[in-house]
Length: 563
Image 1 (cartoon, rainbow, N blue to C red):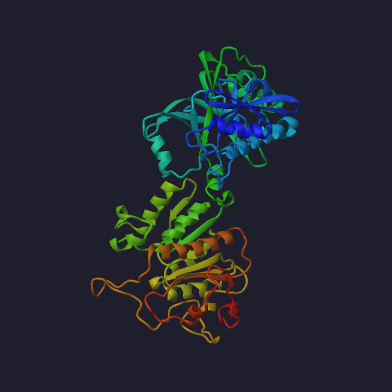
Image 2: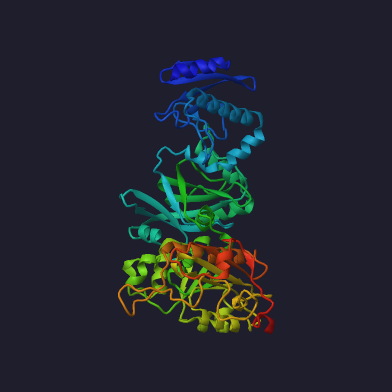
């Protein structure tokens, strides 16, 4: 394989030689001869070759290029989730990878500003090159701030009993039931002092030729006089043999890289936190940081940090409502208030978010435990309200941005809708329900101002008032419930998938509402198959608009027009 690649490169006028198990090629970049060493992984050509810049340290700081003890620098191949490799032509795979590496190096060596900016953008990656032991990391629960603050540092252990170090502050906003934090704290041992320092100016990480002490002193010199004065005062009151310092380093408008340094000394001295400090007796140990703060976790998982001050009430915690609660927590809501009177029964668990360990628990209590364990930055509240009509209380409504109703009771929901619209200051509301036998599900959004409400649906296809919702896919005058074990075991048949798909509709509308993307009341449905040969409505037979949002207002609605 090496000979085959070498011959192909020579046809492309690239000088190459085989040295042991590697191919070394020579390239002219910016007037200099640059050598690149290529290594073929066992899985090649199904994965790309590894390319190293030789004599790495002579080039100083370079973006996208690492370094090791052999004075080689692994050249980053970039990230491409959908990369397709032509494994039938291994020499072309190697050649194209090599050309990409040459292009990367050329751009960086030609343009000093581009190189600097890209190094800053990958600050954490360059910091890791300073660390000899990959297990040298701290777990940080610190939120980015513009103030210096003291921290708690403690030692704990992972499930394999490996040592971990964690950093917390007293203003931690993680909910107390978050399972990962509880696991770490179950074995924690306080081991000393720590301090958080925000770095707002964009600085370069230490390069391959940089002494870490010199880098630290240059960082202190980049701070303002006031910041150095504050750090000097903090240092004066914190003489110690060990001090942990964690820094959030600005790399973009709202982006930060997190790094940590452990300072140790054989005797108790003032730590080197200011420009005129004596650093000679101190040893510095760099650590990578595993970030566990809200600003990282939420966006990384598709959530939204700007929802942390938003509050939603959810009424109905059955199979559909429980999924809404989970999804609303996942998008980053700050406060979720749960309302339901019911307890979890054995017949619920096959299509419910909650499992058997919660049987005979109140659904709201069980959901609070389950969601608080999973999502660290949501405040789940068990409301003292039990029914939908209880939520018409003015003090309750004034403290929420929106209310999602998943009770499955159309009479109760219509009453609530009518009473809610009488209030001048009301939150937006969403009504969601799933229809039996998997024929579909629906979500209705009622804007906090303007026309359009749940009652707009209660008409027939001819525009006449009706007790049946025009939104529904199943005709009302038929038996759609089934029973398994005789009288008293009737239930509405639908699957867990039907519940989830319906919950998605409601949660999407709620997300849009929280982001102020809905300017009017609207409705949306998904349509499934009628596998039970039940009687379906005119809408079902003619509906081909699944998942598309449609207007809700009906000019004949006496509730809207009574306002």
